[in-house]
Image (cartoon, rainbow, N blue to C red):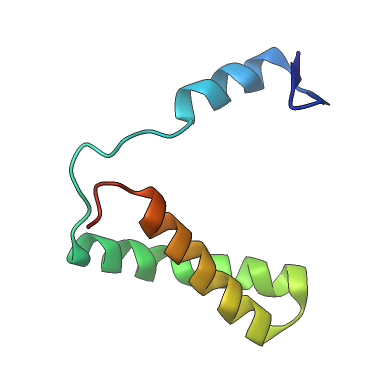
Length: 77
């Protein structure tokens, strides 16, 4: 099966379709977002740092990542 010009096994396409863009059951308030951030930011920053080798770039990209997350999460306002 092709998705966006890449050959993907059917079992992965089915899994991808079920996990794509789930709407939150409840809006994410500030406390929930802070807990989510504290749980995930360090791991994401480490990944970005390993990919870029630059701590400043990792800081900037982490900030952009969470900014995009907040903008894409309609329950968070």
